[in-house]
Length: 103
Image 1 (tube, rainbow, N blue to C red):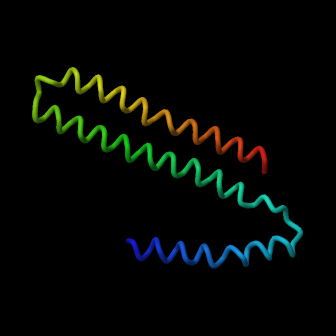
Image 2: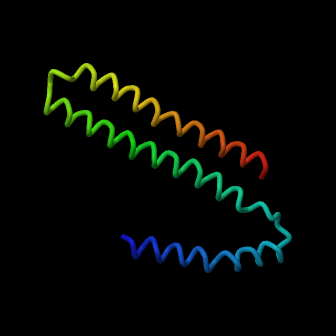
């Protein structure tokens, strides 16, 4: 998996000068990176939120399985934690919209 990520990163970095020169020759705007940035912003934020929610729910279930008597406090802390994790995704959506407005 590391080799795949490294390979794709190298290909992307090697393609950047080619894309920039093609955009200059075609007379396109120089703001093409904003669209990529906004897409990456929302994509990575949703990915991180999904991973965080999965880890939170899994650890809460494991905690209740080990100690069923503590399910009340664990549920409360889980709901608060999920709210904090989920609050990051709308911020990324706002940033993506603001970046698109500049494009």
